Image (cartoon, rainbow, N blue to C red; front, side):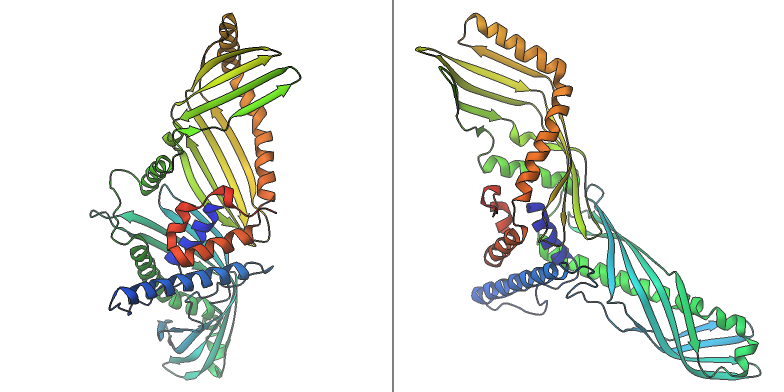
Amino acid sequence: MKVLIVFLVAYLILGSVRAQDENAEANDENDEAHNIEAAQNRVAAQIEGLLEHYKQEDPVGVPGAPIPDPMDVPDMAKSLGMANLNMMKVKAYGLSKFRISTVDVDFKKMKAEAGIQLDQMLVKGNYVLSSFFSKANGPFTVILKKVYVRCSVTLGVERDGHLTTEHIDMDITFGEMAMDFQNLGFLGSVFQSIINSAPNLVFDAMKPFMLQEADKQMRSEINTRIEKFMGDRRMPNSITPLDSAIAGLRKMVREKGYDPYRLEDKNRTMGVFSVQLTNTWITGCSSFYRVGNVTAAMHNNTMSMRMQLGTQQITGAGQWEVGFGLMTRVGHVQFTVQHIRATVEISQPLDTRKRPQINDLQFDMGNIQVRCDGAGTLDYVMEFVVNVLPNLLRYQIMDAIENPIKQRVQEKFNAIDVEEVLKVALEKYKKDGLDFIYDYKLDNLPFN
């Protein structure tokens, strides 16, 4: 769930919504605190609006997105050989009625690709069509249907360590078109082939301007969000920002006291036979690293994230006690696991009334070694059984436990009230800003 919260907060902070007034200047600490609180409240309100928006069956547009509708287009002139076509006072309508079709984010490459669809874009304006023997003028209308906008944004780290927009690539295409040029008169029949191609002419003339404006606004907006989000923090040039973030998470795991980690004591009794495992510690939980890629996507109004992580050597030790009637034996056990690797893919519909899903879960475990003492001759038997059989059959064991673990995780997901989770998170964000994310614990999630 933390992934969903971070994704939503980062999307709005780095994307289309201005969280703070750039022209406001705090005169003292109280004013600055007030401005920060107001900005956090605005972001929280915008996230709430976004979540409500995606509860619709067919969400169109994005609440608060700064999309001009209509958009003014500069005057255009096109030479048609024997005639010249001039278009003035051109406006494009319907740009705010877009649907976000797909979003794919590659965190390793720091690249995001998005596909945006428009059912229809209406272009209106005035035209003048003139040749050496005649002239016509009047209003015109061009309808473009099935408009598709493809956008790719790549971030990069500058020499001074600041994160910035490195490259933006956009393209616009359409499926169908229709037009209506009024008052053509005699020129309508003479230049029928020219008029039939008018939609393409209008679109080709508008396209460079639209792409240029979109590039300029997106670059400025993204860089502004990055600057406000990152502050004066700088990224290292030696490793990718993704690996730098994972290194920060490793440090956080250690600081939170999860490495080494103490397991709960276990006690099992079966008739006169009892087994206890106490004072068990595991070391190496913070040695995780990125094995493959980490990607996020949004398709069909469902957000998903896929990651491949692994650990270095995991070690553990504990004390065991076995009882049989009035007889008890006490000993110690030590174990090492060469590595653990996991591939996980989870998804969450943007309609937060629905539950998250675990789509894929795969495990890989390295060589296992166990040392046991306290049971006398049985120590060797136990070590042989644990050291030989699991290593010979560990791939089969991993395949066997994947589905039960996946089902168990899905049961936990099914019990989570996602709306309530986000509501609690937003309330914390209003008070603490982004710091609340680092204190968020799975144990505190609201369950049904």
